Image (cartoon, rainbow, N blue to C red; front, side, top):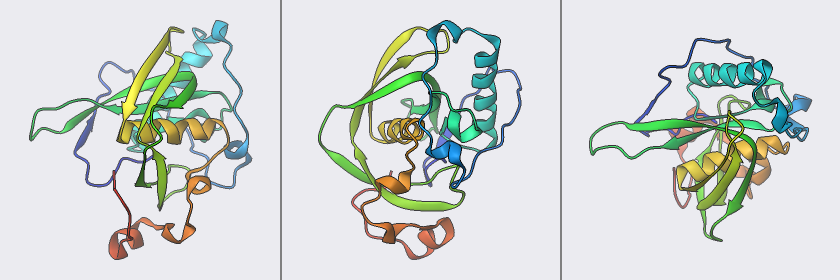
Length: 199
């Protein structure tokens, strides 16, 4: 998922070695519509899986994104990266911590939804209005195989829902109740649309 327009965000990739930049699958490729396989917890520490995570981080950095799922880089495994906005001092850019989520599940914490503009690295330059739960619980294994749980609200909750959708073969256009808001980024900005809230 590309970063939101107008959000002052600074990604932190400190202490991450340079790895490969992977090719991102575009809408129409079957890998994006195929449910991903669960990762065997025994294989989480393997060099192949660790390299995949490192390469995904490097790819996310190169594409200036805030979330990425393994199927987007042609790997049908339940692995994704989710940008979680950290608190920042007033006037400072927000820091984003990249969370590695293996075999993630997302559970709504409220029935309340928000409607925001979404894009996708696999749908280059398209944007649309998508309703999402305002708050969710993300449960997954980290890259060390340890279980964790995070309660997310607002933009990070949207990113978590968007990325875990990819693991089920779902794209943001599938969540749009009205495709009339689907537009190229330039036209979206130029002409605007009516919506409840932009993230």
